[in-house]
Image 1 (cartoon, one colour):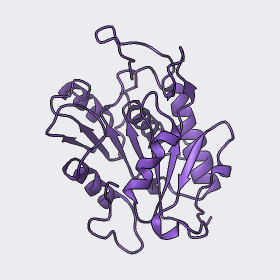
Image 2: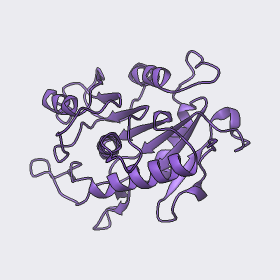
Image 3: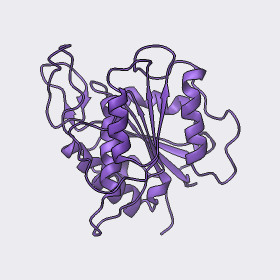
Image 4: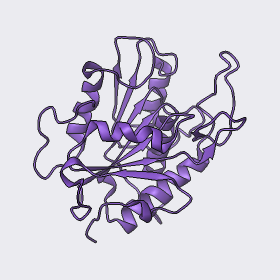
Length: 254
């Protein structure tokens, strides 16, 4: 079937999304993009709050779909989270991002990717990429793992890639079975406690192709300058499909 750009109306009403068309087609939804990038925000954020990043990077020939996590944080903390539960790190007192991802994996792998982007909009798995921050990165890796281990009754295979900022494959995730062939880029700060060498090994136990890029600074936040963004730009350039070629320097921070 021919592909069509995803629209908000294509997704079930219980899923909150925003859709950002690529710069060249921002005035028309009739020209289908050859790529879809799913943006998954960090714990405590919203789809609306993370949409500005998708607008700032201005990826050519790529429709950006920002998805809101399925559960609101309790205790009037504000924002949403991807985990099955809410737990706190006993050492730091902060929210634990590794909280199980069965619910969000079902939503992302089945409802968003298989049912909406593949069956309704006509995209191939190879034309879909995930970019996740923090807990969103962990959820994205879990979804890619699920997509790659289909039971034959559903679409299965490799996505274009997963970029995870500050989060490895979850301890709570399964590491059994063949390695997933979706390429992965892990981005973290120097001496990251979350993306530790052990966490990188755990991710490589699940995914066959894993790159690691570390900031010169400490902290696992979003990239804040061109040097920190460059490995992400290069990953986009290698993995996103293009009808015209990706112009050099086309991916920039706003």
